[in-house]
Image (cartoon, rainbow, N blue to C red; front, side, top):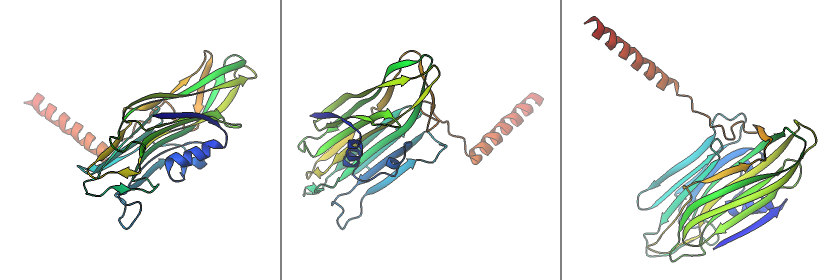
Length: 282
């Protein structure tokens, strides 16, 4: 089952807190990337969590356009999360197997939660004065494996979009049924440019998450949204994005090779050159 709703203003903060489980360092900023993975087997009892990781990018200027975490143990658990503002993608996946003879209960606390979030500020400019409809979409594809535990395993998605000064509009959804997820969240805002070349700052937040609060004995629960949730900005003719707060919206940052790698590459090229000269001389 999908439950979808559109909200404005203050409700966004409550929604983010509800779906992400804990407060995020990124939420206090207009711009940021964050991924998280929590896997626990006893609702924060005596056993330490199997995984409790957070990776974020919030310091400007960015030196990377994607943050990611992944890992797991075969037959026990797995997790992966990517927030990629350069390619405008969010990906998550996770699984937890209960090989014991007793059900695992989170008692309201996630036994597994995997989360990816992206926030940015986009500066829009218009060649002609006027009011235009600007649409931002979050297209969500994925899969839930929830046989026998429906209602205690879910995936969530949220999209918020609006002017930096003013109220944002939010579309969100919760998915609880076994099987494929194919959904599009969409927010359209009317933006007025007083004169040609005028610029307006628009901010957005998008996240996807997967959560399970109960895993029956002998079951595996899994959520896979690594098929990709992607952002789609629809601009009328004459409008364009002239810059972004992150500096890398739609512009992936290519990692710079480490000095050691550079040295090895140069050494390899030198060796190739030496061999070539020897062959020529021979």
